[in-house]
Image (tube, rainbow over all chains, first blue to last red; front, side, top):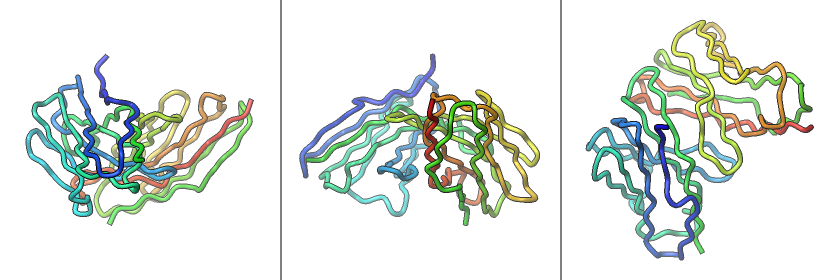
Length: 114
Length: 113
């Protein structure tokens, strides 16, 4: 089945220690997104790639960066995680950006910061 | 700007009860509307969607009709099961915001046997 895969499902890091979360897709979609979801809240868009074009949300902290080396993979790098960065991180993909285009989400990576 | 308002939860129901989750929206364009479901510890799954007025989305016994006159997209299911316990998010996208998803706050539904 075509799908969005996130690894690891659970990640523990220490305060200030860089961490990388991984997302891959077999849907061959053009667009990949990263969201942050804190407990009992809706997901918050951090950034997205349309193919190789990177689009950062205005309120995404500089501490968060992303890489998309090819169509299938996208990484979220947190340079110096703080306690406030503990959250579920969701990757999503869509074929295109337009009316009715559906975003397909991965299972998420739950990040704990000690 | 765009916004989505969902009925506040949590909602607790008995099995086989009727479920309605209200969703209303504000949008400057002609939005597409979505319901996503999030089971405990999981990512979001698309439940259904509608892309134009009067469209009805349906899936797994859930239905929602895009009502432009009332700017609403209420989710309904006639007979819920314990396995429907989850958080439900209403969302919209349109060209005024580059088709980014605007989510409601989410409604937690618990179905008791």
